[in-house]
Amino acid sequence: MTEIKGVFAASMSVLDENLTLDSNKTIIHAENLIDQGCHGVAIFGSTGQAQLISISEKISLLNNLSTNKYKDKYIIGNGLNSLGETINLMKIATSLGFDKFLIMPPAYYNYGDNEAIAFYSKIIDKIPESKIILYNFEKLCGYKFSISCVEELAKKFPKQIVGVKDSTYNLYENLKIKNFSILPGSELKLLKGLELGCAGIITATCNVTASLARKVYEDFFAKKEQTHNEKLCNVRKVFDQFNLISGLHSFLIQDNKIYKNILPPLSLLNSSDNKKLIEDLNKLNFNSEKSRAA
Image (tube, rainbow, N blue to C red; front, top):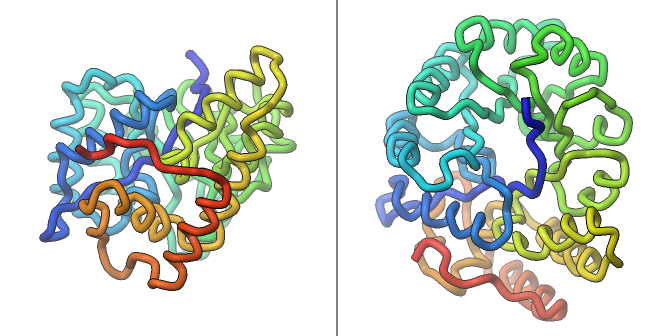
């Protein structure tokens, strides 16, 4: 199987005035990220407010996405706690020709590695054609993958467990599995990760740093001097001062008011935080790229 490599954005969801998912504009946003430098995008990750969007809206978007020109560049998230609903959504996605998934284990309940392995085993039993990137984000789901757990899953399911998005950062420096994609969740880890043998990144802020991140990625493999990494990391550090979803939506409002729509309990940045975000980014001479969700 071809390893999943490159710069991936955890793509944002675009909502209408009624806080309903706007499939067309969400897809345009994702297309623009690929045009601006991303090798692909993850749809319905945490940045895309997936946990707050209804299953019917997700299915509608998947149907529209199935005929998209960049279809092979999309990784589909679930944003669901329920094993049954996760399997059902993945079955629909696979029936539409998608096979790459970013799956976080369930939140809220306390469990360990054995239970996590059982969760993914049930999914793979029902959808053996799936290629799953594990989503390691203890801050959101309460569970942290151990190296041994990931190794066991990759050994047990070499055709299905193909990578990990590491947003907890306890894996990417020491996990070594052949033909397995390790993708840290921040631009701050991109260059170091590549030096360690990681496959790339999947991050929220690639919604606005796609071209910068791609330059760092390409320069690494071309063995060129890194002239963009410092700015890329500094931009990420600015956004890291705030909730990433709130910060991204607040920042992109400058170009398109559609981004003001966000699902409760999430919100836009308050006026003082928004002012600081814009001022700090201006100090870096950083501006958003145009033509998003046009």
